[in-house]
Image 1 (tube, rainbow, N blue to C red):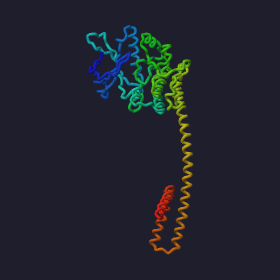
Image 2 (cartoon, rainbow, N blue to C red):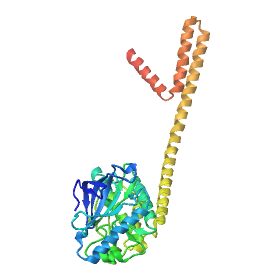
Image 3 (cartoon, one colour):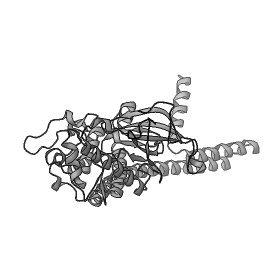
Image 4 (cartoon, rainbow, N blue to C red):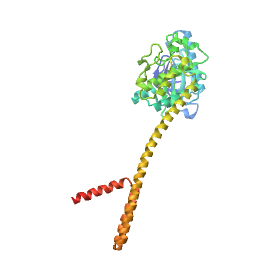
Length: 383
């Protein structure tokens, strides 16, 4: 197979192994050539199909067909939430030059810098907030909106969603992708004891009927948010024996009932009861956001109402202090006029009076407290 440090296709140098699954292995590679200067030396992901897992020749053909479909799908989809591939991203590589029949099917794609949501959850050791959930759900629905006109992903889960440093989510691993017009692939694969999808995230129709619909991706997406909002794997929760509804809400008490209802809606056990398309989910999210805005509007109205009451009390105190200061200052001025004081004493007293007036206007609440403290201090000294 592939060795670390090996040069493949006279272009890619294998840096390290990233992972391995039933269908393929993935490696980090360095682009030694590149179709343009921006790709030269760039790190990418090499996905290699594992045909040795399948002994049946017909099964191998189906797996290769599935792999090639992934290539074509990624070439057609251009969205920041989907890994980019180049026109020459697919090739066949012969690791053993003595055996031309033993070649490997390879796909090179963009390397996403960041963590999977499963890694993010474990690394941060905390559940996502409602604001994060709404943002991430919106991003993923928009990504599915790009995919669903022609294809289904069929394996949505936290391990297959990555988050870039800028917060953009990326849906990865299109190895189980299926064209909407072709229904036989999943039946062929599952008949060979190789499952498509992941337990806990796989919808009932894929397990029972071996069939998938756009709503099947919605179910897996809903289960993904069960994991992100509760911190538990969906398989850890019990289900209603009759309705098959998942009992998970008690582990997501920090989330509003509106959002919980939406999550339950997109992962209804019966696919016919789920949203018809991504547009319906986006409209439901708009309604949810409008309700949140209304709630916040009412909350801030209550805050403003309280502030108005406090402000009116503040104005009352300020007016009282101002009137008291004016009366006191007029009294002092009249006293200065009637009594024959030296000019410099009159000026000094006038300065004190004006200072008191200024302080009382600028600090109407603090000034009475200051006078009270001075009075207590003088009284204590007399005693």
